[in-house]
Amino acid sequence: MPGRQHRWSGLIKWLCGALVLLAVLPAPVKADSDPRSVVEALHAALLESMHKAAELGYQGRFQMLDPVLRRSYDFPFMTKVAVGRSWADLSPTEQARLIELFAEMSTANYASHFDGFNGQSFEILAEGPGPRDAKVIETKLVRPGQATVGLNYVLKQFPDGWRIIDVLLDAKFSELARQRAEFAAVLKGGGASDLIAMLEEKIKKLAGPT
Image (cartoon, rainbow, N blue to C red):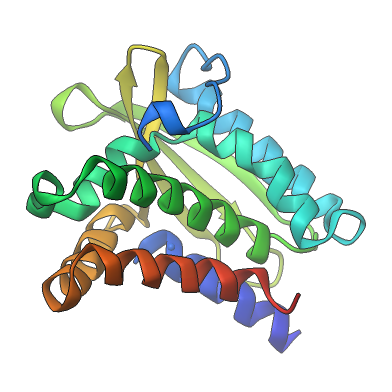
């Protein structure tokens, strides 16, 4: 259906192009022990969200996926990289708010776009080394009747386990690089307050009518 294809297109754009200080996040769930299991757990949760999409609704999908994503991704690291050099100029309150909004926006994207099941599946293809001791898990998203999408997850080992720090579309397009370019433009034009407002507006739009 055209509407559903449009929503999937939006998710793919977020993934390629679409992603708190620990004190402000809920207590971390025990991390999976290796990169592959982190990705497998994420995929399992996404498939469950799709299967139960109608039953859960947007808010239900958000609540189900939020703890999984916070366990799978290292949002504090990703937010700091996305903000770039301006990070050191932000107050601790601004840093904490941006990390929380980054996490909420990521969950909102998944909850909004994984809104139905039409035979989609994930397949893990390979695991290999990445830059600076990172690991790369190569996967693909199979969509019946549509082109298969290659998704490569880049994971880094943190004290509490392996976490995703970037997603590459077809091994080419970095989500983290896209976020960094977008954030830099907003910060240059208006500073942290404008970036916070932009993320809040994105989350609101993804949630849809209330």
